[in-house]
Image (tube, rainbow, N blue to C red; front, side):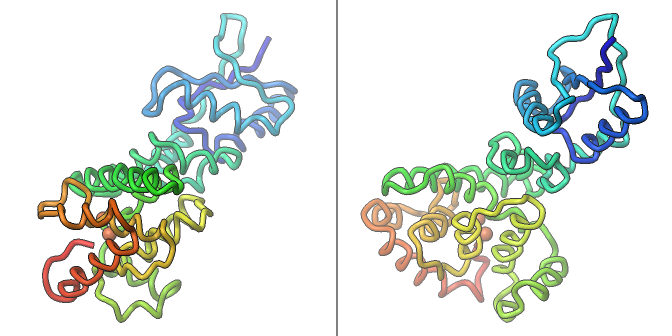
Length: 271
Ligand SMILES: [Fe+2]
Ligand SMILES: [Fe+2]
């Protein structure tokens, strides 16, 4: 008789993994099989792959694709499964250890996080920035995948209140507190990426950090800065900026920098 643990594993969290290991010990059973239920927000195939990855370090933990009446079936407690929604909202540090590095690159998770943390308007802007940034990365032979991810998450803390952002700034970026609160979210997003999303990719985090002030020095930084200002859903004319960007990232970044700095402290410029 197999001990089968059923759950949505949407995605599998560290607490669930620990609970499974305790259950193995408690029941005195050496081998355990994990079964991913149909229902879930993320696609079943992805959830299965993630469970497989999370269970890989444990010799006596297996994944099964079906169950039968001879199995002893045990459900993951509902209160444990609640944390899965937090992972999908970007708190990837709560996911099972072995899958964190996969999750922040996964489009479905990125989209779910952006939808959970941004207004609908901001989410569609972020999606458009992701596409635009990937386009320019491809055009200039740079890292398309990283730029797409940076586009998704660049405004992930923009909905947080000034007070919330101030608290993070005081700890991590006190030197930028004198800047307008409108630009704080680029710094707090960098902290969020590192602390909550477990993204340790410095190319992505740097691009996000520099996307409001435009003071980044790499082409990846420039691409995100440009894409943020000229993605096609922006309600203003972007033809000239787009033309320059097709030609030179450096020129386009400098051109947009001049335009933006004039308004950053006065008008409702969206950064
Ligand atoms: Fe933006
Ligand atoms: Fe922004």
